[in-house]
Every structure is written in C-alpha cells, then in structure tokens.
Length: 114
Image (cartoon, rainbow, N blue to C red):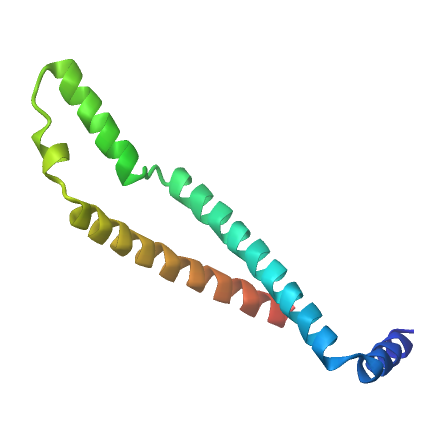
C-alpha cells in the first residue's frame, strides 16, 4: 500500500508544474522552520526558567527597585551601557544556541537509531 502511494506521488510530481512545486516546497520549508524556531524558543525558555536564570533586563529592574527601596543610588544600572548589555546578551545567546544545537543533534541521532 505504501509503495502504491509512493508511486502515485511520484507520478503527480512528474506531471506537476515545477514553479508551483517549488513554491509549495518553499512555503512548507518556511512553515516548518517557523514551527521549529517556536519549539526551540519554548524549550530554551523552559530550560532557562528551570535553572533559575533571569533576563538581564529583569535583573536590572529588580536591582533598581532594591536600590530605591534601600535609598541607595543605582550607579551600576545607570553605568551599564547598551554595548555592555549587547555583549552580555550575545555571549549568553551564543551559549544557549550552542546547547540547543547539541540537544537537537542528540534528538536527531536518537531518532535515527530507533
């Protein structure tokens, strides 16, 4: 049965317009890529939350609030420049992306072994 379906699909591919087929494949790739991106973002968010990490912006807000409550000047939050935030964010992002790539590779390898 699967072979018959496969043959039918191949026949349809031969008869199909290449431009239309390329458009369908392209849209499928975009949808799949978006779905994968969302899934990875969710998994990263879960992992980060599970380990107790917070976003730098949230940390700076909390630091400013604590300083306000204690009556201390908030020099550290004011001193941090956009470039410092960007560098810190990039290094964290790179580490997370590297870890996600490893996890995805592990998942792919597990799927192939099964």
